[in-house]
Each structure stands twice: as structure tokens, then as C-alpha cells.
Image (cartoon, rainbow, N blue to C red; front, side, top):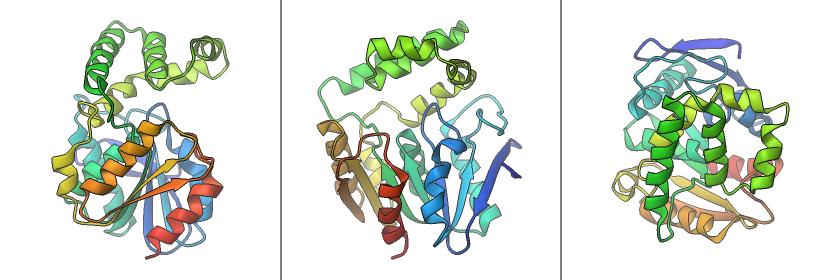
Length: 259
């Protein structure tokens, strides 16, 4: 990241931009940095000025306790101001929940696209989120970062064998290093349910996307977002999973943001 901007509370947020034109800011999800979504900037940068940033508490960005979702909205406000005063947002997974909250908060956002925000639309979803929150908080307070990462991977549906394999892989130390930010994404997700009142207040177009190979509840969550936002649209991407391919999602975003 070659640029810095200061959020309202003084926290330094690292970002970089490529391309020219209307601004699009990419918002990453849990256990990720700006580098995770950077490949998506490649197809978009042919048409837009694309901003990729490290959310607070991860990558090259700093952090200032105590955490609140409002601070991350202020981070986006600072990025939008630094980029020219207006932007479209594209949020991946829980980053989509943050992008939607930013739009609902009245930031100068012209459009929002989200990919598979994991809102619970199934029975027991809120209870599952509450149990996860309790166990995650306990693990982080006790400094058990590895256990916190395991909790998240189980919540995401990863098989136990794959989790143990990841724990013994070279990428595990990096995952543990940003484990405290799991609490931030958890806060962004609220009680885990679709925040219908907040979504209903969004006054800009919203595109909610899911992959056809993802679980059915992911599609229902995307449809719920599209139905609740006054200017919402739903779209399914053939053959895609939660790990969406940039070359597939990119053209869809170019079409939407180019309207």
C-alpha cells in the first residue's frame, strides 16, 4: 500500500489506487486484507479508479481501540474524501455488510455491490451467531488466536480435516496475526440476520450477487438484501462459490457501476 489517510479518530488507513474514472472502493471480508481483493481491481481498473485498502487492524493499516462499527464507516468516509468525494462500494462477504452500513449511514456513495454477505436466513441462524460471538470473545480475551481462527473457519463451513490442515500450513501464522479483527467483522454482521430496517433506508442502487455453486441460503440472503433495499437487484453467477473468480465477477461489476 503506497498511500495513507487518517480516519476521524486519527487511525492511519493504508490504501492504493489504480485506473482512472469514477471511484470504486473494494471492501474485504473476514480474515483478509486489501491484497485479498486486489485481483478484482484488475478488470475494474480498465474503467474506473479502483481503491483497495487494508481495513483497520490488519495489513498496513493501524488500529485505535475501542472498536466500533462506526469507526470503520469513518474509515470509508476518509477514503472517499481522499479519492475525490464520492465513490461506489463493492463489499465481499462480511465486507458487504460494512459497505451496506456505510450507504445506510449517508456517506456519499453512488452505488453498492455486495457478494455473498453471510446473513442468516435459516432457522437457528441468530442463535448460531450468538454462540459464535460468545466463544470468539472468550478466545480472543484469553489470547487464543488460533482457536479464534478455528471458530471462524467452522462457522464458514470448512471441514474439520481442512481446518487442521490449515493449522499446520505456512499461512497459519498470518491468519493468527489478524485474528483480533474477527471480532470486527462479527460486530459488522450484528446479530447475523438481515438488517432490514437499515437496508430499507439505503437510497442508492444495490446489487446483491451470489454464486450458483454456493449453498441455497447464500442465495436467499442475497435475494433478501435485494428485496429489502428500495433500489435492490439480485444476480446469480453460474458455477461460482464463495471464493468468486475475479474474471467472472469483474464484468458484472463493470456493467453495474457503469450505469
